[in-house]
Image (cartoon, rainbow, N blue to C red; front, side):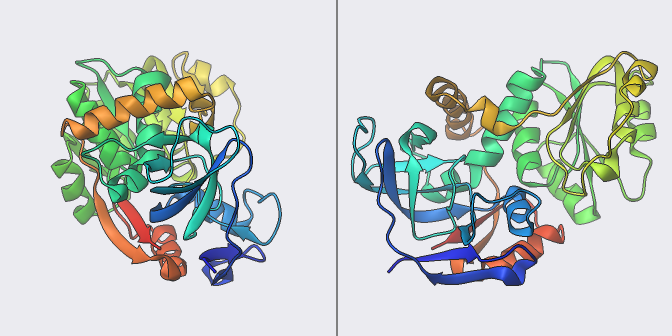
Length: 324
């Protein structure tokens, strides 16, 4: 029987159980994938804790992975057994075998490894919609990206540099500052030690930036708003430090007629056309070498609990991949 990491109750890393599960069979419109690499994301922690509720318990964690098509369900025409695929919006990827909707899978092109694909789908597609759709970064823009040494941050900063932007990044330690610089950050702010809003004003000579990309949440709000120039966009796409409390929308008027948005990846890949277009743009910048996908940690699927401890403790940089 194939193995998977399941939770039978919500809680800390200790509720994750590595156990035998029945081989899943693909239904109409689905494919079964024998996985070679599993992506790890902060959203997995939210599902483990019960911040986001699973459809039912026991529940297999995981949203992202890559591997080889092992079986094809009724009505699937775009995929054949043996082809390499990857996906970001799946469910239950902390497993040796997973069933995914064919509509949510993409072919992995030659020149991109399974590990790279598994490490970049969710984070890379997040960077794609942030930089190309939420606020379309133009040559000459100066942008602020929080947690610049994180999984999304290291991809986004490289991509923003490729687009011709000046990138200001915030990080939590000198080691992460060095990493952020290596991946394209022009200015790095240690947000625990410095007033990052004051530093952004200093760097931009008092103007502020047109966009702040904030996946941190509670710890960086509302100071993120003070970094924006009039009509700037506050793009809140995550809350690794905790959720932002309800705020008075009038604050956006006071701070310069600002825009605030809370986009999610799943809206941006909700149709086959959107997924294919966005993934093609991601694969293109990775294949060209403009963006490299930093995999800084590899672990066995059986060790998922420790992987979660490291991720929650903010001890990770770049992407973590688990090997079934």
